[in-house]
Image 1 (cartoon, rainbow, N blue to C red):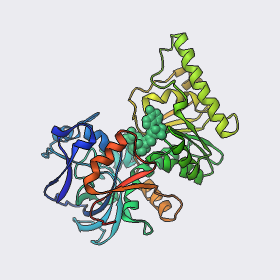
Image 2: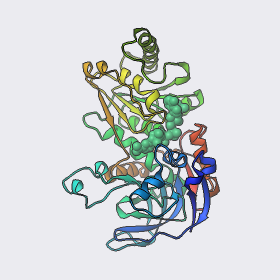
Image 3: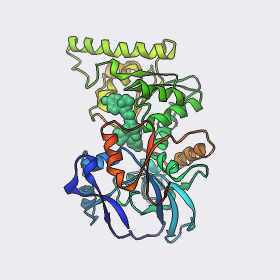
Length: 386
Ligand SMILES: NC(=O)c1ccc[n+]([C@@H]2O[C@H](COP(=O)([O-])OP(=O)(O)OC[C@H]3O[C@@H](n4cnc5c(N)ncnc54)[C@H](OP(=O)(O)O)[C@@H]3O)[C@@H](O)[C@H]2O)c1
């Protein structure tokens, strides 16, 4: 099959990391499904895979016994069931979309009742695991498959799952901090993959989404999706790690910036109320502000660290105001099915912004790397013509 491969000798900016090569179609084991990939989604994780940082995914797999010296990325797909392994109920010809979160269904923690997404065996297909959707065929576990929403094109169906299911778990997976009617919710990167989904979901539940963006054009996109308004982060400059808390002068400077950002939040919301939930993924640059701004007894829920992994928290605000900092990662199968049902019913738009050809996989990831990608989600045509 044709596949877009990353090899260690090409680690670096995505534009040069991917190359089309011919490799064997992987074998299909019990409980597995061979998918003819029609379209693939584009996610930030394969920017990280291209860079070989923070994880060298090929070396990490080889350490666990894998023999392949290449990576086939792609954690989102729409496709057709082509062949099935032993014990599989899906039939050749079924049209499906995929969730990238995988686990060992026989793992002890899952058998003892853990959410599979929190299992010690959980990993991400098309990133930590090989043979993702940037190839003509992909092998997946049956539980990863969900019915393709009929109203969507192949490209639309391929573009949403990783971001939508992740945002869904962030917003509705962490009781009692789930979005309630009237809750103000701050959403970083509102025009990005997670953000465009989160804005729509918060609106659905009667919450008030407020987006953070880096341009007015992106802000207007968020308002069209349902945001009450937006904050342009370029108007502020207190980003980055928190100063040492014993440095009074530097802390006073930082607080001035954070308070100004908070006042802007009130202006956009139209009242002096803090966000009950903050949807985080930008990481080191923004987490101090998120933790400061979050309401008393509210939650900052984080699924990434685009700008770095040092999450500086002024612990005084954490305990005195009884806030919660919650990690969240992809989703379980139920959450993915609920998101797909919402998309199928037309309650959520998959926000497909740009569809590219198979030879443009590197270009798509370079756009994300450079934060030059269009608002929403992108897709790659694999076997589909349009
Ligand atoms: N753990 C998981 O399951 C999971 C799932 C999906 C994504 N993620 C992670 O979450 C992150 C975002 O993913 P995505 O798909 O939403 O990516 P995306 O489409 O690129 O959106 C991210 C947004 O972050 C904003 N941003 C960039 N630099 C920023 C900065 N310095 N400060 C504040 N905001 C900044 C950008 O918006 P503006 O420039 O307009 O502000 C951008 O649109 C990535 O790190 C990804 O790996 C994790």
